[in-house]
Amino acid sequence: MMDPNPRHTAGQYTYKTSWSKPDQKFVGTCLELPGLSHLDADEVIAARGIYDLTRFVVHDMINNGEAPPAPTTCEVTESR
Image (cartoon, one colour):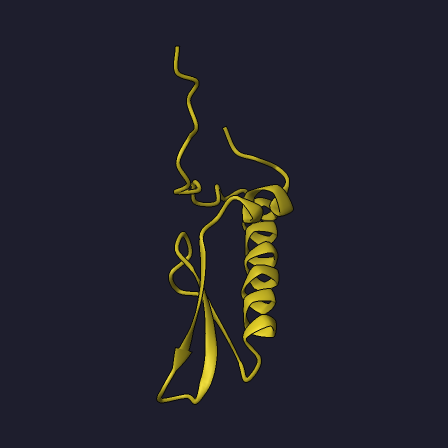
């Protein structure tokens, strides 16, 4: 079932911010949408930028009737 809330979906995705030596900037990426990235000289802004970009893309996908990728996060199960 598709989650109609882009903020909720984007919040469940896996993000990474790392230093790009060739660009001399931080690059934020999203595991579930590998074609997206956001560059910035500030690590926090790069992280926020990829999150905001992901939300925009997920919202656009939903508006166009496409299903955004499922989050790769682990499910927590209750042990008995």
